[in-house]
Length: 222
Image 1 (cartoon, rainbow, N blue to C red):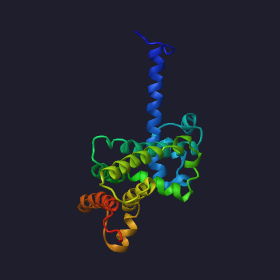
Image 2 (image 1 turned 90 degrees about the horizontal axis):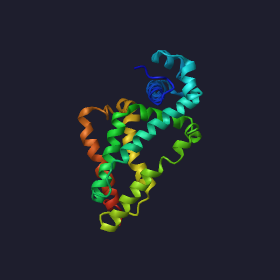
Image 3 (image 1 turned 180 degrees about the vertical axis):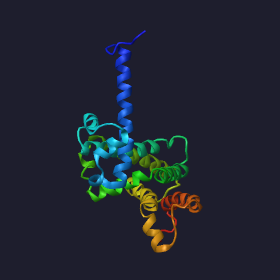
Image 4 (image 1 turned 90 degrees about the vertical axis):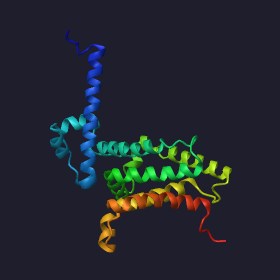
């Protein structure tokens, strides 16, 4: 039996095909933008890699800028999804904040393109992120998560440092981000590849212990 294109099942198939095509375009575009930057990436090269046309890409995304913003939205949504896996209701505060730090480490380690995209967008002074409604409130969930962990840790007596959720997020992110973003210059200057497998487990533990020690007030001046 032939399914009519105007039937509900036919419309659903077209929708699935469209979503799949958009996802594939975003995947290729992310690689191109991460490697060449916003100005250097060319839509016609993305189209050639996809074996489609520039016109088709513009049909789905409207412009190169909108495509780039969609790539940023996808990249940030993925890291926020990882953060939401931390179960603050069933983990003790120390374990919860350590888990968040280690999950952030794992995500940044596995998604090097995300690091490049963030670095590129900082060069542009967040010009494109500011144009995204989707990204405007995307930082709120992780801050709420950290705030819940900090409140639980204060109530239990595990945390004694009067900490700000944004500062804690910055502390975790800076360690995980620096390790990947500065790997080449750091190795050239100090002779150590921070992303080499032999250093991974030690640095992963380090970021967790660092944030726990800070919240416990260890090393704070009297």
